[in-house]
Image 1 (cartoon, rainbow, N blue to C red):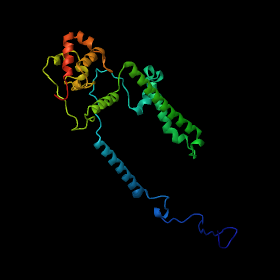
Image 2 (spheres, rainbow, N blue to C red):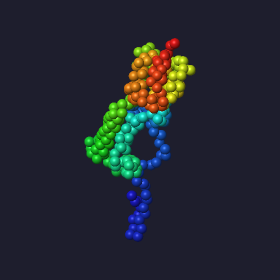
Image 3 (cartoon, helix red, strand yellow):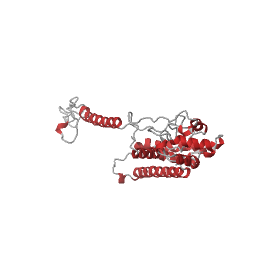
Image 4 (cartoon, rainbow, N blue to C red):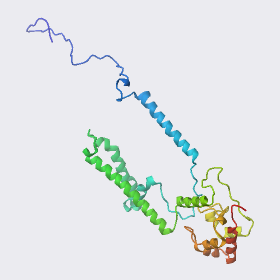
Length: 293
């Protein structure tokens, strides 16, 4: 807008501002979240404090569970034992994927770095490639299809890995450790013994007639490979108290024919220079290993 005398050569112009531009007032304190009930709240400290409190409650709950029910100990490691390696369930799909020819052998570099690099690279680029404002999954066919295919692949590979593992166990006659632990727990429960390995609940069973010549037979026969020299078990079950579960005849049958995943040991014992009398005496001595004497 201009005011003043207008001439052909000069016009006096006075700027009074643009009404479309609001005058700045510096920092404006936002209204308290109570002005918008149920709509929003201050992140600090209101929202953050609530999240911390929920986290503390969950953490205390986990601590209570870990203290009240200690984690069970597995069997001692035994490098000589025949074991089929198996990862945790959440890695089964990767475990199965690395079995395929294009991801192993001569192509292991492609399988480990190539395909995985493409997959993780796609995740990193997803926010830059999918810039649409639509958030309904059926309105985003490409992103939704890739997500559904990924989930299906994970479920499929996990199922194939577990099925193949089960078939390997069946073919080799092995039992997974958690199955052996469950069977031992049921046997202990039937005998009225504690089934937990929590401190203070398990009493050690002593070796009966430790100086008997059968102890040397036990070591010479190679039994210590699975049951350890102290008979507490090294990849195999403990033989302390084995007489509470098996008689002399049953133990002799186990030595000759095997038991569960344990193969027959009779031929191996004979190959070590033992006689039938030595083996019979060993079975008799093992039958004496009872918890209460």
